[in-house]
Length: 292
Image 1 (cartoon, rainbow, N blue to C red):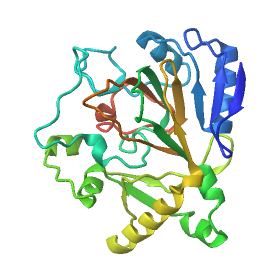
Image 2 (image 1 turned 120 degrees about the vertical axis):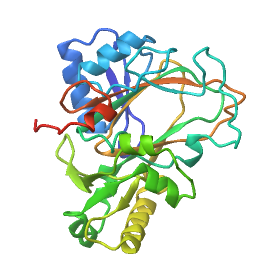
Image 3 (image 1 turned 135 degrees about the vertical axis):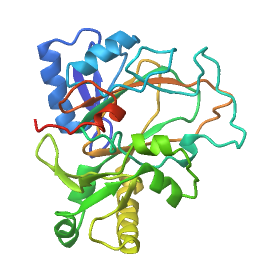
């Protein structure tokens, strides 16, 4: 197994890793690689739902996807523009799609159980567009001024998808979904797997306890603009067989656009937590997480 660094600050490309049969040597190697690079690109991964789930489970309990997609194995998230029959999803009446409003984010900030990694595997990729961009928030933290590092050290941020959508001009009236994905509060600064400090942030950060909303919005918007500078971004151009794994605790990611009514895109995601039971985020939010 060889690793090539794809960005000056992070991202390791791994060649020769067999995702179909993880053994203790593979698990130890990959844990170390993820601690170092935060985002790892595995080339020529096994194109099997069962192998993807088995590989992900070697590193932590699955956060199960909500049921209902027949096209892929239960437990995985369907990151595609396809129906269960494998055809391209037709346009909505208003022409809008969820990704139209997507900015840099981290997966599962609304999960009451602590998230760990996401594993995204490509089956079918468009000939152009549909890249995924990544940011290492350890590098962002490193570049903050000493004054800013001191300011962010003890702050907590409230993450709320629906309030974030409203801030971007999107009406959201599904109250049941709002209840299933409640607002969650997380520390802004945390220690990553290799001991480096990192920012836990995304466009879904909408408030800071104890700070007036207007002040919090300005602060979070300024921090987001700083973190999303071009120099921090790695843009992954997908090809079938790529599995990209990222640490949700110290990275952000975002998709780029493509002609979704012309080209098929079939990617499937497994997400794991640090510990806890294998349940969906919706179920997890109905129970109190226990310390590790």
